[in-house]
Image 1: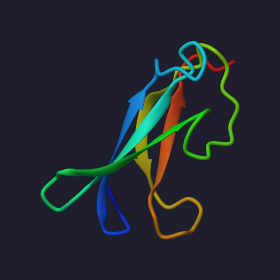
Image 2 (image 1 turned 180 degrees about the vertical axis):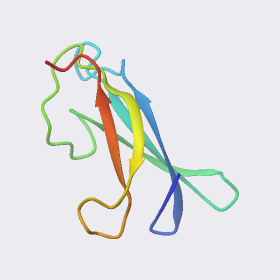
Image 3 (image 1 turned 120 degrees about the vertical axis):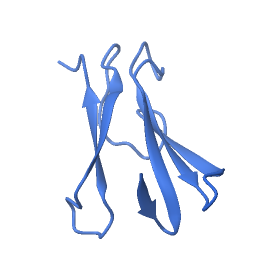
Length: 86
């Protein structure tokens, strides 16, 4: 979990989510102080301003891990696995 803009955030992989056949995606859940869901953002090739290109069966979101702040915006980043990307 990561704090972003005052919310606790949790990222969940959904490797079989479809923008095509099993292209995958992740869901970022924004939680309040009581761990209640306030909103969510889907990230895939059809949502969340994702600019990558996913093909059928890539399974983006097979794994998700928090990382240090890679781009210097003071917010921790995510690494997302894509099992069958070729």
